[in-house]
Amino acid sequence: MPKTYPVEVRLFVVNKKREGHSWDRVAELVKKEFNIESPGRRQMGKWVKTTDRSTINQALEQTATKELEAKKGQAIAMAMDDLLPRLWKARDAGDDIEYRGWSWFFEIQENVLGSKKFWQYLDKYRIERSGQPEYPPTPSPWGQESLGTQSEQK
Image (cartoon, rainbow, N blue to C red; front, side, top):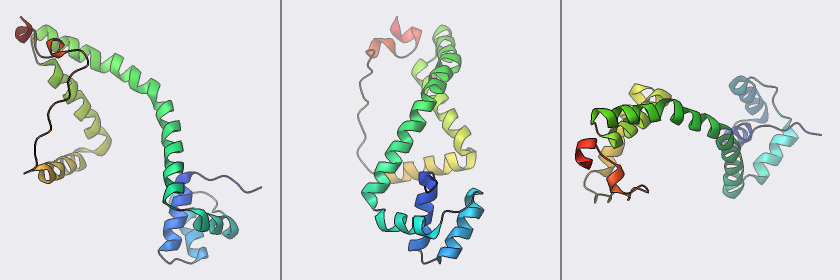
């Protein structure tokens, strides 16, 4: 029975073969890239023959669903341990709690991407959006009165 490989390995094989690499070269690249024993030629051949956009989408969706489920608890813990205290502190100080929430979100993104890539992507997004119509804000599920500072609420 063939060994099961992660979707990333399968997609890597398909891409490398479609780039014109030989089977030996693809096997070598898999070994180097993923530090695993490479799949057999027959198994890689099946992936190349049967992998189309819908197959890739389905595999990515299944992988993402599993990963998101695993991360759900971590996200809740982060919000409880880090976000909520920041929001309470901002509210007590009369600061804009919505801004504090977004700054927490951006801080996470910057930590994941690194500062250079974070700013690079943010700048690129701003350039792409320039000259386009503004999006209206999405209404808060908690109502407008729950957002903002204490002084704004009085």
